[in-house]
Amino acid sequence: MVTQGALYLGVDGGGSRCRARIEDQHGTLMGEGGSGPATTRLGIDETWRSIMRACGAAAEQAALASGDLARMHAGIGLAGLAREGAEAALKEIAHPFASVRFISDGLAACLGAHGGEDGAIVVAGTGSIGVGLLGGNELRFGGYGFPISDEGSGADIGLQAIRLALCAADQRAETSPLLEEVLGTFEHDPRQVVAWSEQATATDYAAFAPMVLRHATQGDPTGRRIAERAAEAIGDLLHVFLRHGIDRLSLVGGLSEAIAAWLMPDLRGRLSPPKGDAVAGALLVAKRRVVMAEGAAKSEPAPRFRVPKP
Image 1 (cartoon, helix red, strand yellow):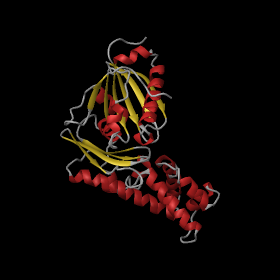
Image 2 (image 1 turned 180 degrees about the vertical axis):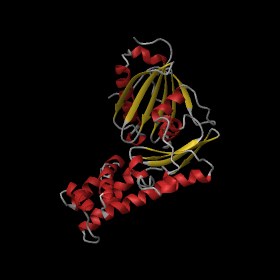
Image 3 (image 1 turned 45 degrees about the horizontal axis):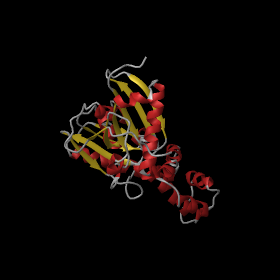
Image 4 (image 1 turned 135 degrees about the vertical axis):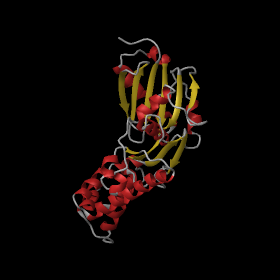
């Protein structure tokens, strides 16, 4: 039976997938759902469609009717929110909720990891970024987007592997089992690599990261160099927060466990397991359980319902 009263929706919209979770006013889980990528790099309309697909799946699992969305307060953590004009464009899309608060996916992950308290996270996933909270103020380092930033991310790891595979194909560098497997994906034809790269997204590049890390653990010299470089970049982000006096650190994201294995032991020993995920952080924002500095989390009242056409 669906409970009465306020409902809360937390959304984590990232470069690889979008996740949604609905809780009632008592914090009881009602439903969860997912969809494909939800990043403003895909365009605002496609991002919103992905968010609503994940929300719809969660609402279906919770046995909610469309009218129940009107009593739902939403916290939405979204990749690419800082892109110029992105937040303003999102505000132009009418929504069915009682209220919506947008924050970055990195801030959502940090809030979830530390329960809304001071601390910092480094995200190692499709992209990479360091996000911290200190006295209610957000600290952010890196994460300017692939390929100009996001060092140590899955996309960056994949890019390094592709580049070195092309060098090996030209006999400008020694090959290795990793590079042979990468080239095999393109039938050992550099022209196919070029054609692929003209349309490839960060998610496409990041798809090669598990392959790289698998070969690295098996001793492949090229894989090891790429993994070590990635761990150094992630370690640099962690050290920035230590210099700012934040000593509660968590490594999150789809590659966090694999990358942690390549960190220096002393730095790896400083990591704390996250208390919750980015969806939990978004739910804290939806419930207004966190006190942020001005502008860190913004709320919009529910306008007349409209969604982009599919």
